[in-house]
Image (cartoon, rainbow, N blue to C red; front, side, top):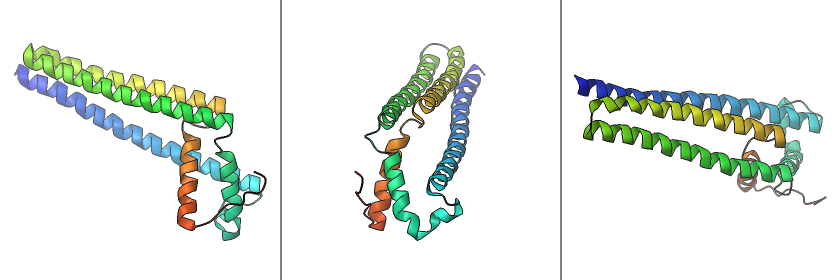
Length: 176
């Protein structure tokens, strides 16, 4: 019976981590859509058009220039955003590694010592929540200081490069 309870603790904590991961992915997708909407509204305001008009072909060059200026790696706030992106990525990977270590240790000590050690697998859920809260606080701090989320400028530069590659559009270098 104690082995069944041990399997329940370890399996339950892994299931809780998977569910928490899906919930965080849903939150991330929601935040990404919200951020995208804000960026579109900002671009429309700067160009003096409605958000619906941003899809017009004649605005493409101006949108590319606006995006290139906004995400330029020459701006200090974008460099800081990119640095924050690297730090947050390392933090997130560290959290995942620590969760795996906690689950692995609980599993190891459950097998080698006592089935009662399986309850410690639940610490991995606490680690996941702690690391997520710290990551969210760090992201919001980066957003307040730079006006960008961690790594946002780098992602925008990559998206712009991909867009230009696929469209074969060359932005004007006037004013550079």
